[in-house]
Length: 98
Image (cartoon, rainbow, N blue to C red; front, top):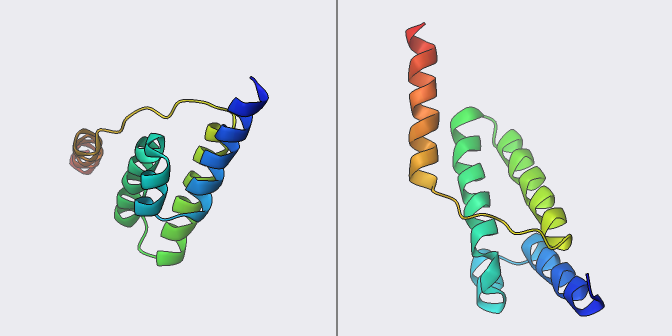
């Protein structure tokens, strides 16, 4: 990876870590998928954990993992939140039926 590409990747990662969704995506539209993944993670954490501290820990871990991937110039795939939530709900129903 060229130096300029590496610097840009590091800037993106830092923006994901520090900035809110609105500010970050205005500066760096490429971060939309990463923020969508964080929102999906937040929604799932709310469903899985009652304790807000646990929810925050899960989201923080996801944010750092995504930031590290972005710093390595990896592409974050788009998130289909509706399908994933339905999938989780379906798995939960299947487990309850057992």
